[in-house]
Length: 258
Length: 283
Image (cartoon, rainbow over all chains, first blue to last red; front, side, top):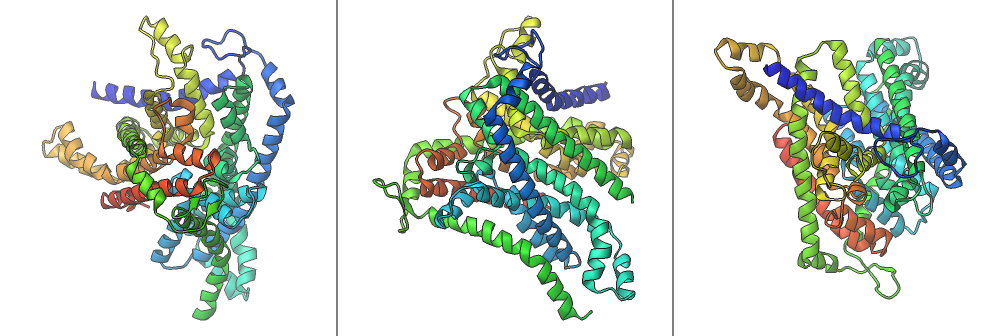
């Protein structure tokens, strides 16, 4: 009896967590231009209409560019941070990790307004560059924690063997450490890309006149315009962010089996 | 390799990432702190770099801002408590009732919403809570009276609770996993009822997990303005909304900076409190 109540409650909570996502996915196929449940007729027409919308396309391009550049920069910074901190005292690692986590641990609006005041004070105009800087700053920790987790499991003896054979630290790093880390770097990059591609709060404060896809969605929902297109874009964004996650999980799983 | 060269290697590797963070992040927090003591020229709209406490004086005296701060903190607390309650049954099942395969499936299902689009997840509740939405259709079909939660603080509470529930679930699951099975078994052998075992053994050992989860649910809710704008109503303004409109509409960055200082103080104080309950011991 007690078990039944526990399983019932657990299933209800799981449904609460997952049903809204399913509902939002279904609405992309709604033929109507106003959102009413139950959906009366299904169609793909809003997919075509959305694809033809210039605003959506340019927002998508901006998002892909920002997420791509930020992910690349963050992958370098995050990997350097992880490799550099590996082998330091646990106290030093703790302080470093805390510092790297701050940009996503502090409330988004705080990070946003802080970066906004920074660029304003230095009279740097808000462009794609400021957007990429902001995204790189909060994406770095994602790569860092992924690579750090891999380094902790990696045996030091491999690197020491390379050095015993006469490899310089640099040579040891490029020919031994880096190949072993590549799986965790790539899965970290997928997560960072998903994080950047979806970010709206910090972007609002650092984008200037650039419109990323989340900013377009935010504006459209707020003004109640283009709702059928919002459904389609939201469907696409969920699909695009879920794919890297699933892929990243798979990569991480296979990397840990190596 | 000598110790000196080794240290040099660490420094060379750490310089780019920590240089970046120091310039762009600590630099930003520093700029925020400075801006809070500046003001905007009411005629030209330019930021005057002269020290003043005016922003803080307005915040302390105008009751509007106190009400908004109280609402923000109050809803963040309410959301945290609701998430603790909702997380328990599912976390308990994942940690202690299913096999390793099922556990992995459930953990991925719990993590999925966290990594999918936040805007999509907020938007889904407009489709659910709206007048012609999914919930009212369900209530009508069941012969129950319709609800009108859309654009109220109730909607805000539901959506925040939904958005951040995975943040509470994850650490609670790992806290429950760490309790050795022998402990509750021993309590049972000594004659404790299941409820007594839960209250005196399992619950106290799960407190660090709840504390860790609450840091996320509390801090993330506190720093929001998107959800209040999309599902809240006239009386749903958060601290973040005031910051947002002061930067975007009126261009008063100094005032926004001063108001956002409350977030820094409250989150900092909450983290110290959570640390006493072991929130950061598991990491």
